[in-house]
Image (cartoon, rainbow, N blue to C red; front, top):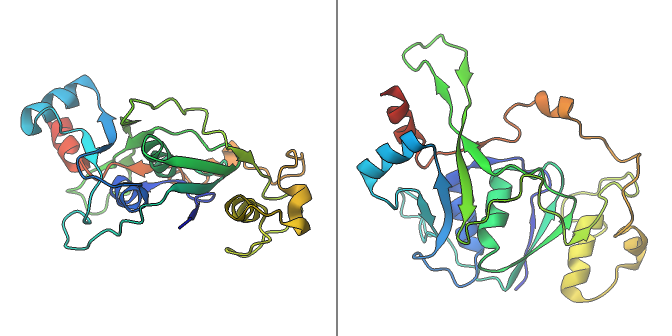
Length: 238
């Protein structure tokens, strides 16, 4: 009846995937409930409202994967434990922020990246040899309570240093400090072998994740608006 969602290395992805995942996890799912509301600039908002109505920018929880007959399971979790790091960004934070009004989301690890916006890809589609494109930020996301104030990241409920003993355990290994903390919260027991490191202060020897490293992977913290992206491109082309 409990779930640990490991998002510590997830720097983003597609909005459609974030909606599907959130829909599987949320407690008492209802397809009439708003997961997120998207905010665009005045020009896009005017054109999209004209074409699709005033609710065009509201994404609800869903029962099926968009455009398919694939059903999304309803786990109906009482709460959700999420493992986070400074690499947890964008679509991952979309899930955290979107679920918070509906269930208890417990964060374990480090403060997240802090990216509450999404983008689309623009390139010369009629030129097959084109190798250049633009990735402009076009949308800001709010949860059902109108909250989007996490540009400095989500602070964990339980701060845990993944590199406390400078050894990375395999995924799912209960000796992993982050997972170990989640399991101790779920079971109510203390994991003695690593209890001393579960809440230790961060050390200067911790693996450094610098801005330079992030720049080497420009799509690392990207969230693609694949829900309304094509329609937005048509508005831009006007």
